[in-house]
Length: 387
Image (cartoon, rainbow, N blue to C red; front, side, top):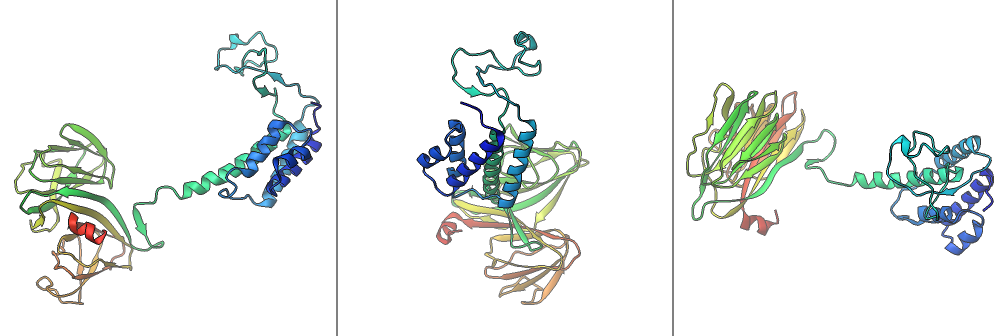
């Protein structure tokens, strides 16, 4: 085929591209692009018809300017004649593998010539091929970017910038003891560098949530790393070992529902224990399967959050900041008046609330208010309500 000049090829290519955008048939494109390389014409049809409904269109002015700049650059560097030859590709090799071919520079590990022509590969990139490649990459890049924006919704629910947010750290099913309720305790364990904790097996479920630092949890001899905010459930009858694998201080929240008592082993100089939720060791986990949800609530300074009505099976704890808490309802804890708020700090306990109690939480401090919320619901009730 007699090579086209860069100008005539670009003009023909532009007409074919515009016709493909307008919905021209393959026959019309073949007639309009007479003289063009068939592979190039097929690339034009593919680039205009593939994912047409989904891909975003580039700005026309930007595409036109890009095309002109590419054509100008191609004209400046275009060779007077291009001689295509057939090649057979092979893996990259050493310089001596192709040192005898004067056409191949030492920095390119290409391959020996083939007797037949299975693949047309010009020795240098044609100007019009550079134009098509740029346009195709621009269109496909827009499609991938748009799809990427819709992947993997975040676990943090934020209504708007600066609004309160809810991060669910654990939402799982746990099994209680057959025929009896189990008391619930939630502890906060802090680890200095090198600190570790060993807990023997208990007769009820446990769960661990990493708060800060680099935590490694080993359950029945199988270790796993828990990044901050990640949780894991420990089935009944399994041993647990926790250690700080980093250089900074680390913290873990450990929940347990069990009638028995397990004596943990640790060095008090490196590991400290504190109560995280004031559950008052209540009989919280009912027999059979239940749904356990562990959330972190974050309220910016000056903002207010209205929590769901208490069920009697939910507990709150202040992790950071100052809380203005208002309770509305009957059967409030001793000393509380319906509709009258109180100021609380992390040192204060939020009491267990009667079912139906309404909660209004207001950040009265100057730093973000962080609260932890633990909820338990029998599996039958969760299924009935669609929770």
